[in-house]
Length: 377
Image (cartoon, rainbow, N blue to C red; front, top):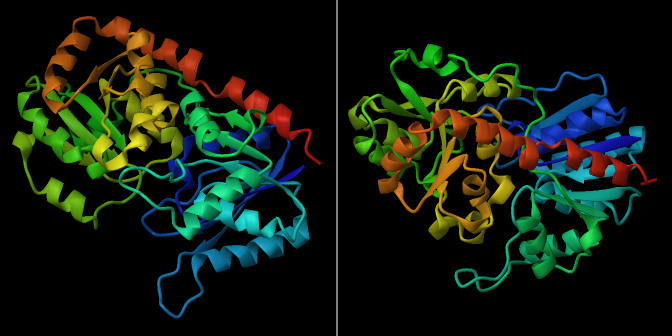
């Protein structure tokens, strides 16, 4: 069976569960074609499998140039004629919108992969745009939707006309295997002393993740702890990064802005002692409150045995249920959380691995997805 994966954005390496799904299905013998875009600051997709084909168009950079979505539509139709896929997976909003439109004239099963929450009406967003209404329609008309967890599923059921049996779950986790749970990747990259213990913030950098507030809180951390921001793409030209990196923070804040492959990421995470994940409810609203198993950085921390310090959200309460993390209300509580984890670090670390295996590990979710799509024709 042939599958197309279509996404406009050039960062498939930033979507662990989509990469996991592609890799798993390719191992099951599915022939997969990824159609996406490319941009210098993002690494090209890193797949090593003869069943996976990748074709990328350059992102629009000039006024008198075809829009990226038009370029993608063109290569989609060309590849569709040659390969005739049975299933097409939209990897982001625009990829799904394009598939929803093309499905009206071409024959394929449309799987709507929900990278982000769709927009709904809220106190700060009183009216949906035409594009947002179209997105809702495409979700409803898709043959199957894949989202992260029960919080996301309930959101879809409450806000969109979609049947429960059309929604499948897949946490935002990778399927790479950890042979050992410690490395010195960041120590080597950042030339850190063995006495330094790393608290890692992996992934995005910006106001949505309260990075500035995290950096400022390090003044109260134990002396041998440093905060490392590792970014999934090159942020050297971003104004937020430049503002943050100009401050010294008593040399307790460091940056790792060179992206790494999926396999190197595990080594990088394993070199830290604690993982941190903060989300601004003010900026993200329900997208933060219902974060759950969409927080890819948390999944990676747990897989590598890192205890987690995170924003106190109901959808992240599993960290406390498994006693593998501490939820805090604001940055002023981080120092106390570090000390609490250190008081019983080994148990916190063991619980992190247990939480990942029982709640996050993608295998059981992938089996259900594959069983479902194998019935498509």
